[in-house]
Image 1 (spheres, rainbow, N blue to C red):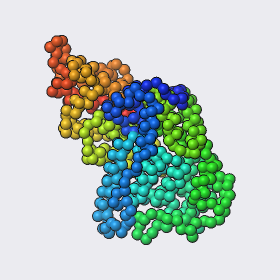
Image 2: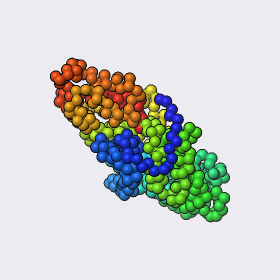
Image 3: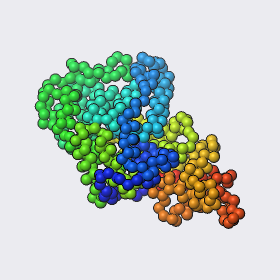
Image 4: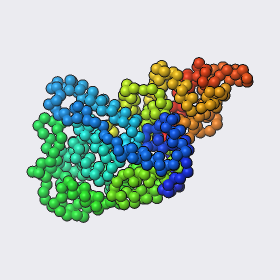
Length: 497
């Protein structure tokens, strides 16, 4: 897969022209997990500002997932037998994964953001191994996904999942553990080596001591013990005092606002716009600087920064379309959203499982730095895994209701789908809808057209006034659409968004 250099030179000025269907599809692939033909058609021609305001307001007003019945369970709620306990735990994890996956499919920007933050404020379920902690963590992600970053950092740092994952529960006043203090700066707010010293980490670890009370039954919320806190004076980022947890967060945001804003805005840019934020061919740095200025001016509220970015000429520039490699979750969920094929919880659970097989297991990134995204998703094994699994998924859709393939194609082709005898005229809009910028050239279109025509003798297309093939009535048309889709999902262009 070719590495994309960022040549986008457009500015943060608002995009004012009516949105094309390609731009709308781009918007929904980035701000959610894509959208149906109907949704994209309805938004085509709209003003970007109004549409994005609607999506941001929806995200701001969404409630988090309701707590499952086991949200506050500790070890006493599980059987003593290890096998039985693990079986129940696994069923609970699957339950929450399914609920969250459906939320990803249904809730556009809010859960696109919660998914982004899960790869920034990273924990790994296999490390802390407590489902009550997992729900608390997901709840924290959803409530803060488009809220205030300082509040988010503060709340995340006290989740039991984080305190176990980064050894906060072992951070005693008489023996400080530096793990969380280091990652607070290096991975969560400032970036490696940016604006802090080793001494700052040591002193921060002392200030964070005391959150070590774990209860007697296990899997209980971690609480603060004053007698385990280092009450001595500490100097953090040049500020000296008897600091505790809240003081650390205040000092960090007071003393390093520009560094935090730059670091977070760069990650948002690379996730939503282009994986290359440092190449001089474009003006990514100018965009990130503008975003960071907005972030600081709005006291680290996330919504104003995203509003500025998503409404901009830069976001809708042609150089921003089709340059991010789909993660496994994107790959599968885009198919569901774009085709509108009928699916149920069994389908969604299968896609979650397939994503895990391709190294993107929900709630369990590879390490504290998270999934590295983009080119890491494309290697020989992962590509073959994509092809084989999506082929099985498509076959399942076809077996359940092959006519939905015809309906999908008719939605995209309109009058031509009802009347035209030209199969190439039918195949092209399907291709252009599913691929961010279509196929590379006309020779590649011809290959796809040949796949679409393969199951029908040419005489049925070329009979002039007596030609009998149309998408609307030909018995094998659903199978032709399936053949085309099976071909397209293997193409390099389909791996991009």
